[in-house]
Image (cartoon, rainbow, N blue to C red; front, side, top):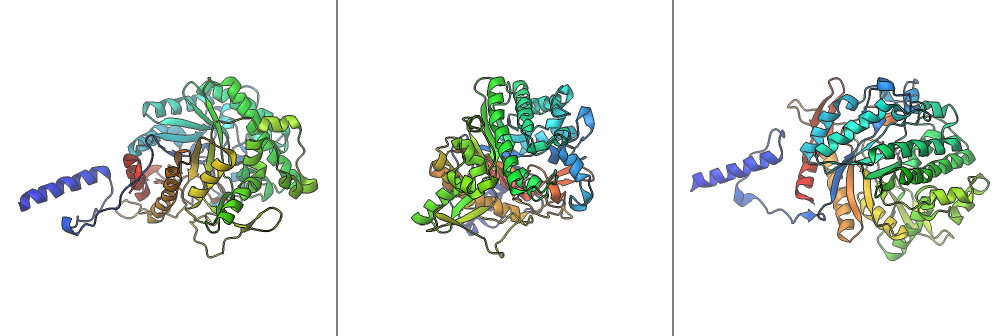
Length: 486
Ligand code: PNW
């Protein structure tokens, strides 16, 4: 009897170990009668797309290879004082050479989908003009490798690495950049859409506009006036709209087009009807320069009134292009912004978070799992969106390798469990979220924060390029395998 039991629990242990390979120091299993039953799994709908995301300049390296032209991030990161420890993306994760290793990591996780970005200056070294075939070849190899591994590629066409040649002609301060972008986007879509079904025009317009042209923390490091900044913002949404049109004109029929935007994730301070209503109003007004003008084809009256003489200059044709219908909305969701009802004309007020609010290693990454419930729910209802993806969500930490070669990122696991529980809440109410992309597959070049702030579920030793799955990778593998949170 004892023998049989032991054998059975051995088999169970072995099965568990097979599910969590390479997790050292598994604790001795407690006796069966002392194990309390787990609560029911929080299951996701069949076919829910579990994914992960990266971006070209943050992972590729090979900055000067195969004809790639410089981007504003090459210039910016090489100027002293712009990044932590003077870090650059020259080598990054060397993903350009190690992409097969990385696809194997994805396969091991069981990823259904992978979101990557194409580097504009690899494909068009000068931003416009003659394309560089070797640039596109890399993405052909990557896409083919993903498909061979059974992973659906989701392609972002711009993740901040503007060709330096275009910056030299005014960058996003110039309308011409929006047209150059559309030309590039149409070209890539034409060549990849036989295998890639989902394209995102731009990643986080808000971030690259505000950080790159507003406070100078990101490339190209400018600090423009409010009027000039509003014009840059307008050119970014115009690029999106012209890009949508160019992709539709050049891609295979049936190709789906969307974007990945870090919308202001409005969350009611308390879940009572008046605050919930205020959070809906705030969703439109706080995103007026980005998702709202894209979904509605017009700037809200309140936005134009608030900007006054600094409002952007635009034509009705611009608005028509910007409002081009899209197939899906990608939400990059990290931090909630709390909203309360207000008797002020706007009908809402933002509530600043207290300084003591818990956050991850990045000081801006204040945690609030309920953002992943409210943001897609409110966005879906405000704009009647039928297909939403969480195109980014993840956590920064200082992760260290233990002497036994493991990384116990319990903080990231806690973060993911809490956020995914809230996502489950949304999905089970019928909010049309079709997939989730965890940021990020690998530790990578975290922009101005360099390599010190790690976002990966795989630890990267940047001296050897060795990848090690962290505890969070084991956690995520289980979520994907069960299509449920446990
Ligand atoms: C996003 N903020 O960036 C980007 O899309 C990724 O490239 C990046 O690595 C990831 O999130 C983690 O940072 C952000 O200051 C950078 O609020 C800064 C902010 C938000 C998003």
